[in-house]
Length: 290
Image (cartoon, rainbow, N blue to C red; front, side, top):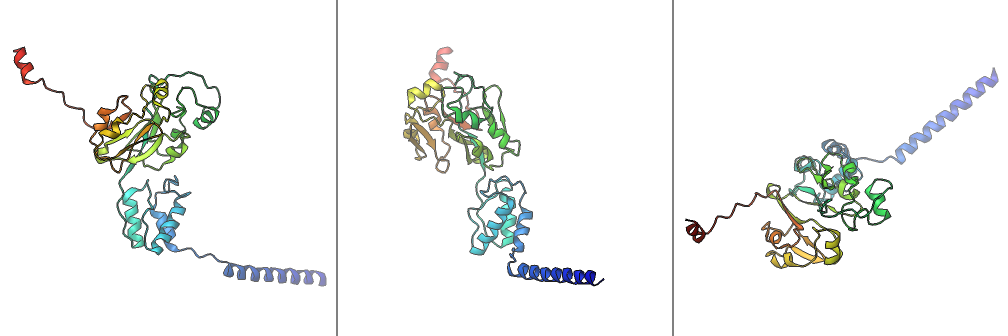
C-alpha cells in the first residue's frame, strides 16, 4: 500500500513540476500576434495564389500590417481581390493607398502551328518544363511556346486554355486576375503581366526570339527580326530593341499603333481595337467610274 501511495505522490509531483515548467515557458517564449493580421486575412480572398509575392494570404496580411506600422503599404497589392479588397484593407489599417492599374497576362508568342511548323517529335514527359530541359522542343524556335500547357495547369481561375488549332495558350481577360502563376510556370518566360489598358486595349510585341533576323524568320514566319522600324516610328519612345527583339514599355505606350503598321513581320499585336474603317475611293476615281 505504501508503494502505491509513494508512486502516486511521485507521479503527481512530476506532473505538477512539468505543468509549472510548461506554464513558465509559454509565458517567456510567447509570440504575440497582432490581431489586425487575422482581420486583414479575413478580407483577403484566400486564394493563396502567390500573386502578391508571398507564399499565401497569411504572409500578405502580415506584410500589410507591418507596412502600416511603418507608415506605408505602397507596393503591396492583391491581384485577385483587386482595388475593392485593397481599399477595404487600407480602411481597416487607416492607410491611404493609390489605385494601381489592373493588369492581365499576355502571351508573347505568335508561333502557331502554321507559322512555326514542327521539325521533331518529342516523346518524353509532356510538360513544358521537361521539354525545355531536353532542348529546343519540337520546333526550330528555342524561345517560343512549347505547347504542353504548364500555364494552364498553374492557373487556379480557369483563365487560360490551349487553342487546339494554333497550339498556343489564350488568356480570358475577364477571368484573369493577374496573379502571375502562369508566368512563373512558363520555363521560357513568354507570359508577361501587362496593363489591361483603357477598354482592355493594349499593344505588345508577340515574340521573344533573340536570334538574328534570318535565323528567327527561318524558325517562325511571325518572329521579330529586330529591324528597329517600330522603334524609329514610335513618337513616345516606348519601344526599344535589344538582343535582336523589340519590346514595348506599357508605361510609355500611348496606343497610337504606328508600330503595328511599321512591323514587316506583323509581330506587334494590337488587341481589342475596333476594326479599321474601309477606305473610300478618292473623288477622281469616283468621277472616272461615272
